[in-house]
Image 1: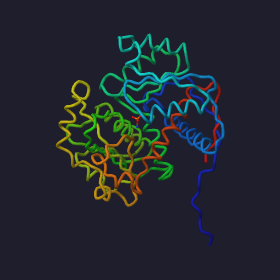
Image 2: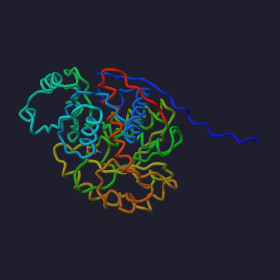
Image 3: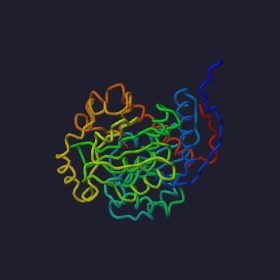
Image 4: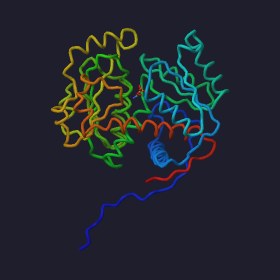
Length: 350
Ligand code: CP
């Protein structure tokens, strides 16, 4: 008797456009819209690798406004804009009139008149970044893109979802993701990556466990969104205070540091002082061994090597951090193309 072959989804073609739609949190994008973003990102990745032009944004301008430092986000947006035929202006808040108190309304209206999108990173002060970009978006008549705020880092989590699917397949039902706090002495990192992960991944089939020491709890509204999304999707979300327990049987682990919500803005050094109690929260080989054999190790980067993770793990065979970082380019391009283009973006899936 002929053996049944596992069926692979057939390639499909599509046309899509979300012109003018803000990309501020994944919560405001329907599952189907996120699927389209991923399909377009995959198509742009193949075209980039094949050297095929994909100039969806000829003669357009995007303003990149940074209140914090960046390597991946800045360069994925700048390179991506160029590859799409657009130009990106790199702006730092300290060199803009916002540092003298210019309002988000005035900034949003003026930049809208000069170009086609405004992207903002404002991630270090709980209660400020997301509010700031929503105020810009209220007055801007071009799309506003969140390059990381205090609540979400949707560009990172979209790239993470793309990477996990590339490695584990499109159907993630029953796969366990461990999102864990890890020790880092470098700086009090934003909370938005773990918050973004717990909100997005349960929607796409993953059972998510969040682990952190008691002081490093996340914003209550993001925990509530994670629970609600898991309930709707028939997946699970739980919180533990034990990194080992979170790693047990996981298919994917994302251990990274973040600051204390209560002191992050005014006294970030307090987060680092408290963190010294938890230097044992490191992703090393024995701990990764608690996860499933071959489980993926991921980190949005920059990583504190020797503190958040050992070199053995981040440079080891289970680490996919460079593929994950590369996907920041392709997903950033999908976000820009779909929210900024003048005509629908045509794409083909693999
Ligand atoms: N992951 C990430 O956002 O990297 P950057 O801070 O370098 O942009």
